[in-house]
Image (tube, rainbow, N blue to C red):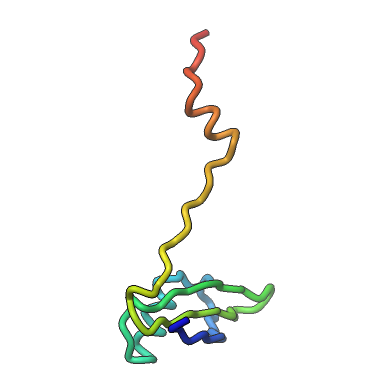
Length: 88
């Protein structure tokens, strides 16, 4: 597969759950790796604690990093966008 998988634990006392970009920068700095080969898969915040578990994939090559998935539009939102508004 050409990747390493890591589970990290990050304490963030007094701060909100860290953003994916912040975590990726920390991982890149710690592993002396390029930010472009790091993919943050999941961030799990533990209820009532300022602690998160993070699943990270570090790829051996930039070409092996998968492209982000496109989110599907909700059916209701799509129908509203296609129908013209009625005037009162």
